[in-house]
Length: 160
View 1 (spheres, rainbow, N blue to C red):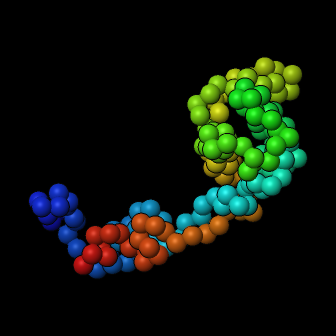
View 2 (cartoon, helix red, strand yellow):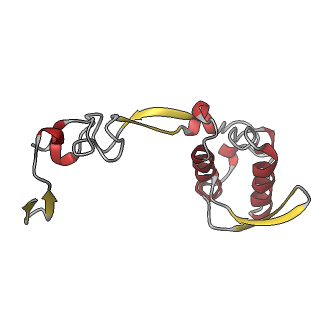
View 3 (cartoon, rainbow, N blue to C red):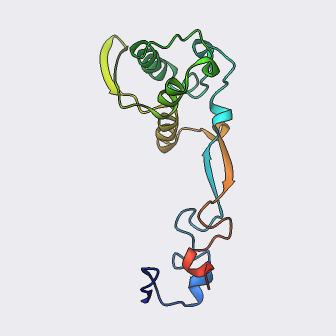
């Protein structure tokens, strides 16, 4: 290993594979050498000008509608959010809690069973659905990797 004591960083010995995005030794660890990453696109998930109870949050009212819709209604009820309002009519705190969660335990009914679940927020719910391999490509956009800026290599390889 090579090290820079001033920067407090260490690097593996460089070799030809360190400059190949097709090798784990050279590929950016964030995008796996692709140079791009898929991420949720808020503008595709949320229509800020549609009332919440009329499908403003597309990802909730699409896949597994009843479970997530019931959870969403429980969240809004608990937090005193009027679902007849549009997202852009909510205050900043309500918008952030809706999108990113606030750790609140939400009580709601699903298939005649009372449930309690923490509210993770729309974005985390969408990522969880993506991990379950549900097709969310309609809600995602491909963006340049912020770690390698599209160059596909590790920072140590790019800094040579």
